[in-house]
Image 1 (cartoon, rainbow, N blue to C red):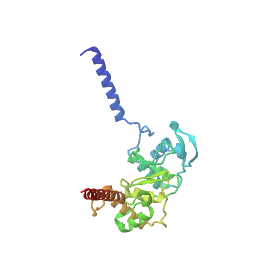
Image 2 (image 1 turned 90 degrees about the vertical axis):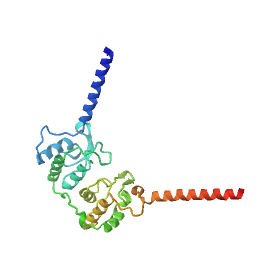
Image 3 (image 1 turned 45 degrees about the horizontal axis):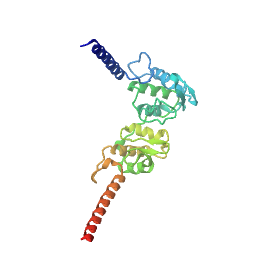
Image 4 (image 1 turned 120 degrees about the vertical axis):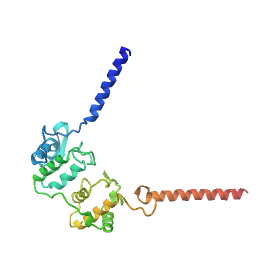
Length: 263
């Protein structure tokens, strides 16, 4: 092998090694303490909060009303967290809504950047900032799916579609619900993340919420007794197929009539 070819080979191996290292060690952008305890602790939550949340929500959870430069060049602004309790922190962290890369973006489901221990620590710390609701414990097994479909149709299907496939509304995206856990569904109903309305226990009782959760979970594996589901996106697909069949039949009739008239 010539010297030039050896140089090219060495350079190629170095490039491939650098690419592999970059893939093996992705830059998450999360600030972590040098050493973490083996279990979730309030102290760990405080440290993670100071490094990743305080820029937008304030040092003591008081919120940041006007955008201002923060750590890492991030433009910080966010609502206060005093009194939101563990419920809101649990939902936003487990769905990957936070940390948010831009204050102008809608919080959408992303890769979760914190470990289970870190999520529990952060949730505990946010709850310690002031009184607030705890993480709910829905019981979909106690719900009624037939009641759930009526409640979901009345309150949720306008944005999420009747089979929870998600959709679009003015200025926002209604996410699909097929990867959301029962607890996260209950949290979302009570919190109303982003443009979603929040529903109190007077509007939707805990028993009714169990039925909604039961219905949403049932949409993941629906019983398609009517035949081909075509993605479970509703009657749109069936209507299109009906039009195609009708047009094909009409063209066939026109061809037959034309042949008879010419004969």
